[in-house]
Length: 248
Image (cartoon, rainbow, N blue to C red; front, side, top):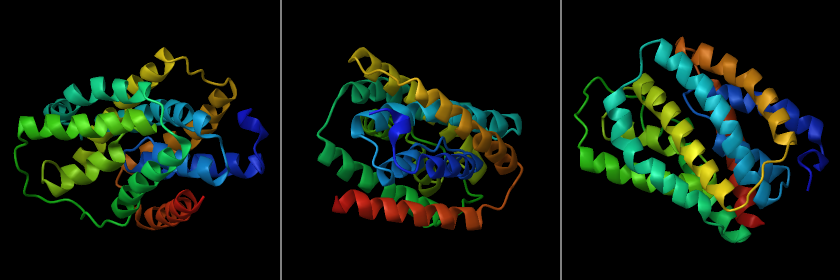
């Protein structure tokens, strides 16, 4: 199916930069949001994963740039997760799973996104603990594998983990997650391409549309933009998507 043959394409293109803006503002690429949208607009599962990863690569890069520019990036914290996540994201990207199983796994992962957006995991702390390398490698590997398998960057899961374990502050977690998302998306994409997956040319038009929101979101988010109401709105959209995923 051509990506531009979906019903209500104009509405999809209108919402896409808004989703990119909201995710980029909190240091994420937005794959979970893009996948939720594609589920709502009835995209075929075989086009969803590659398209979401492609969008992730561009939006996460923009978000990381702004957070890095404002001095929020922690290299050691990033490497503790990325060393194991990159190869496992590649392996996950090579695996094809049944469409119904795909939807269920995606639905479960979107629950993490909803909880994160509603600040169930807290807003950060001034008491920072030193990360244990082996814990970082284990967590990074698990998130990386599922990132490649489902077609997300993993930041929506990594950020709450960093906050829960007190390994970094909110802005630090956002910066680390942005680059984590990029490397996992790249690894997962390469894994898909090695299995014969192709990227539809229309997907790059979606990239251009998403970048409008991604650039604005990364800029304002790194400048201490208050995302409270944006988070609630996005959480509402993801809840609707979860219901659709679990009932169809």
